[in-house]
Picture 1: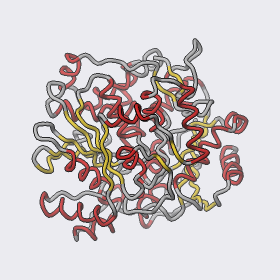
Picture 2 (picture 1 turned 30 degrees about the horizontal axis):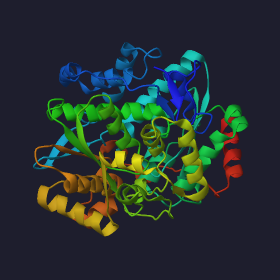
Picture 3 (picture 1 turned 180 degrees about the horizontal axis):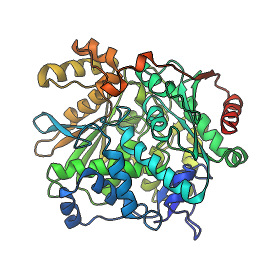
Picture 4 (picture 1 turned 90 degrees about the vertical axis):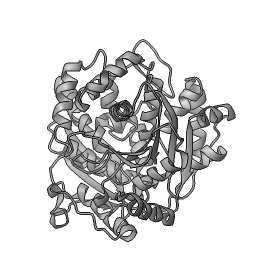
Length: 465
């Protein structure tokens, strides 16, 4: 399997999986995409029903690592990673109401769906870097969960330094402490005086600075890294097979910020998994819902909400879908993305928008509506949902069709947002035993201004430690 950039042409020197794993973002500023979608025959999907989650993950991810990492190596990694999750099913399905299922993706070490892919990334990086005797500096931005998942996956690793930027005072306290109480020498946390989009812009700017990128051997584990998307596809395949696939279609509803999680479901459909609808759940930062309803991809000011991991106005992974809808034309994709960066308004061609709307649907919830949904879910189904998962379940309810199972991604454990959960339900969710002492642990992080040169200086210093 070879890869190409959404903003560049495919050539004979196209990188393989190991190359794009370490580089993360393409040198031309685009995002890496496979040169083709691997097809999974119907009979193969049927045979996968009997596989464990780890074995299924190895099969799916292996379709994207051909020629780079073999299936046996992937199986060993997957069994090690998912054997440490706190539920035997890894990503269990819970029927919340008739035909509406919650896909619980929060049973990993940091209690968020990011663990499903990030824990595999830690092992994949370790494997490739050891082979190449190379050291990289991972730089990432987080709106709450990606940072803690990345730090947990890469803490103490010999060949990696990791720097995570988060918006100062714009994550929950549990989210912040899961990052800032990790004290290994290879970890640096920076609280940026800005919002998530500011953090994400600085990460992109560092990658766009070729000299800085080379000097620090930058790598990325945000969902701009294709390996993250590849490692999220298995739980969509697994849950669909559990509910009758491929003999009948299913639909998915996903609380969405950076668009990577729901993109993985769309990729699964391109590989042969029968999917009827993909439903986007947004909070007050509703750029994706506005786009789906009115072709309005206009950036607005990020507003803090009860669901901070979705407080985003620039959904980076949308570029991958746009690239596909433009017939994989890198020149058109580049022009549209550059105009969006300059003007804050993305001019998606009407025909591309209509193609997207054939599969994707969207709703947006206010904080009050989110709280009401959490309250109703507990009162009617005795299901305790965090604010993000509640938005996904609300989207699932809105677009559920009789006869087609609707699977809503539950992306965070309720204990990550205890104040919001208690306000809605009266229940204070407890952290699991391995995090019970989180609030008594020592924190370490730097607060820096929204200044790219100061951030670069901090990264250089950390790299040289």
